[in-house]
Image (cartoon, rainbow over all chains, first blue to last red; front, side):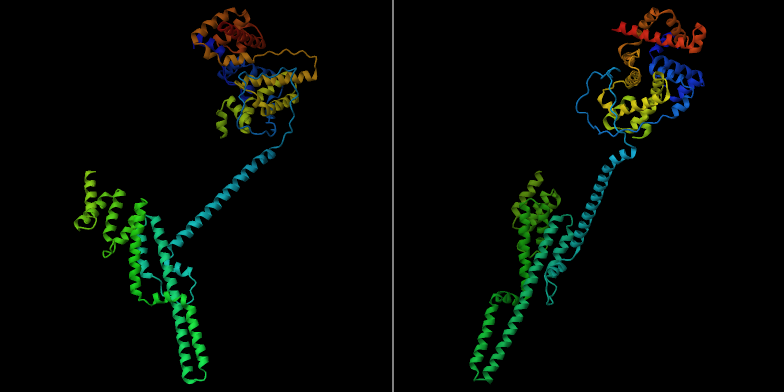
Length: 367
Length: 187
């Protein structure tokens, strides 16, 4: 170290002396290097120099230093943000003469300080518990929903109608293909839900019709037996003709009472097979319409599901329409390969939408 | 923040935490750093243990309660001045007629901290050598022995024939005069 560097040490700044350094300096137990550092600092730091001067007056400096503990601190409102900017010039400590007595705030013990913090913690616990409760409720809700969805539609129909007479399983053969359709296209959940709702509505309707039919059959039987009784009375008791006429009138009245039912009774008399075929046709037609509706709403994935159900039956009048719209759906869903196949099929089979399909194919080739 | 992290913070950061968040851990670290020095200063002025201890507790309590009122750029000189003022105030309370001569080193201490920003080393050396020549003989001798010859207080005292206290005093005064001279030259 040359003389210039040594001279610059006059301006050096170092950290203030620790308790150990002060004690070591007083007891003269410091190593020469440390002693030099301490002396250098004492030269530059009036604070440490004054402190050492003060300790020099004391005999037992160690005991004095060991008795130092932080004071109990008064509670203060927390200032997260200092809104007003502090003055640029450092606020000087007032002169000793003008110095006022420091405001003696009542010191509070540490437990009291901790008590200030506790409500925050409590609030936090409360929120956490509420969160857990909410999560549990949502979880159970989802579980219940999943279980509800798993429940077969037949039981749903039975559960919703309070039927005392025994009923045959309602519309089971009609439901099966729809149910299988739902599982086939699990990706499209929205459409699946719509289909399921539709299934339940169908089953409900069928169950209603059969229940009413059963009731009308029963009432018809009762009326027939009453008629027979009246005939017997006419043969055996001529004197009581008026009475038998009254009986007949009563029977007629009872039949009149059931006038609201005969349409349904007549429908119930139709063979079940024709009924099923009609409903299938209606369903396929409605499937196509639903598909078309979805297609117009640009819900191509949902529409595709309906068109596919129509496609499953080749005898359906709307079969080729469904194929054509399926192809369009595929095209809109960017499944060009599948769309092209369907269009080609329409062209090959010389189907009703041949020209349109050819046009679409040409467009796809140009793209 | 862990305790070790607090120890790495500067005084000013700790004060900032106390002012904004009433950070008790920051306060404790600051207490560990300066309580013994404050006690020494209070002992120097108040001359007895119990008042000195009470004074230290009061000074730190005020630090806790009032620190947000100040914009403290350099904590050490500020705190030193607060401690001294408190002691002088206590003395005046006991004896209002007592004449107390207090030296105000705060501005000089603060000026020291920013000195390296104002000058490069060569300029500083030129000015320091000029100022050293202007010091009185005792101060110049003590500074030459202590800083340039790297002697201890005792060695300097034995070489100059002065007492340790005199050497210390000459060194401190010489150093202060050097800084004042330097400040004048720079301004």
